[in-house]
Length: 139
Image (cartoon, rainbow, N blue to C red; front, side):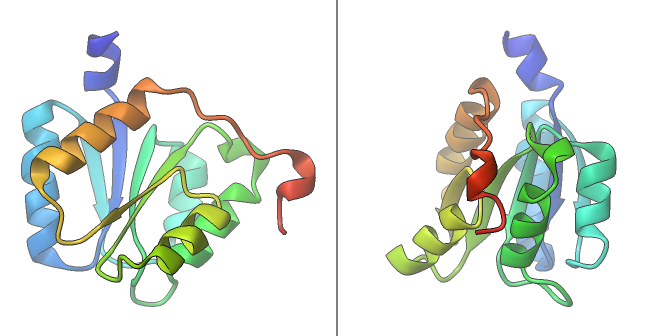
């Protein structure tokens, strides 16, 4: 089981280089395959085409917000298995509720401890995603 998780594909959508470098370090060290986008433009198409195991999605992105990306991905039945972990510097309870309401599977506040993020990534990859019921889509 751990071997499967270590080969998981992760898409990082993060515009801040310093955070992307830290994520690259962590994910590479953990043995994950990864790709990075630095903008929200084209993110939905890439997610729906590649269907990564996990998307680390910044909320505040140039061109298209993380919330819009999350909502668009969740509206596509072909992407039901894609897990989304939203990341934001605005870690209020309201932001967290909004992200989860848009269909995120998890939410982490920046700055985060690498240990905390590593544990959350492992947890999300080890669990099976349960898609929202049909009536809950596009709500």
